[in-house]
Length: 319
Image 1 (cartoon, rainbow, N blue to C red):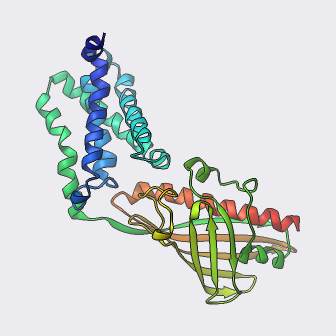
Image 2 (cartoon, rainbow, N blue to C red):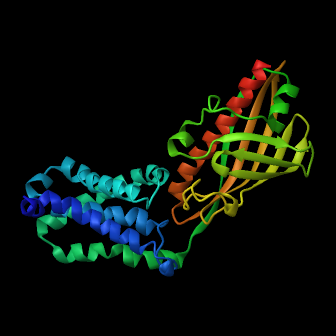
Image 3 (cartoon, helix red, strand yellow):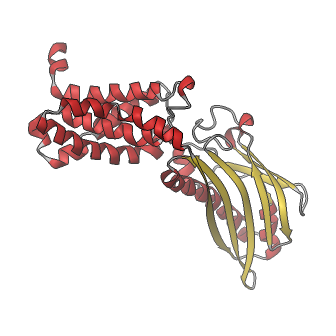
């Protein structure tokens, strides 16, 4: 029975890509080789799933690969197996897979189309070259270096309440219960949620401590203050203060790849006791794929900001 399974083409088409991906995952995570190979790179996050897709289709039964739908979708099976294995042995967290899996799927499908052409030609030489592609791409990518880029996340909300009531909730946010929390994206990703924040006084130089669950703390210093109109502040998260279980090392705030710089509240009058509260922040990404990471980072930051604004609106309108 076991011998029959091992000889099955589907077995090879799933196991070979998964074994390849695990090998690459190990290699790209060796600290002594970090100057050449890194998990947070195009070579691993884009090229490795591309090769996985090519291998999956190359080893699949040829009568099935005549179907384009099979060629495009079948590589997702070894991808899913790879994700489950890394989650089970705690190599990766749920949040990381949520963010990278879409791009894995796209490039695995592209790789599947390439694998189909190799399968037709029985081109084992090109397949052998293909599996080495990440090892050639990674040093080139490392030589080109990461790109530090600044992004902006912006939200606003309209509130039917007096200015003093709204502004009091901007400067001091008392404890947010779990029932008040509407940050759906960060909840799905398992990220910390906001708990409370309080300004020690109103004016330039004031200190504001924004506390999140699981030990995440943002230290904020006011750089501009116009009472009941606008407030700007720098934001600093010290990575050594954040417990290792709070965030994955690849998305830790203040780490090698992601950092939050500053935030601003602006209160705009729309009518009698009706105001629009603006909130925006600036953050940086330092990767070779900011074009993709920036999409997720904006979604996450906007989800946090929208959540806080909704809490402030409900509390202000309740009086």
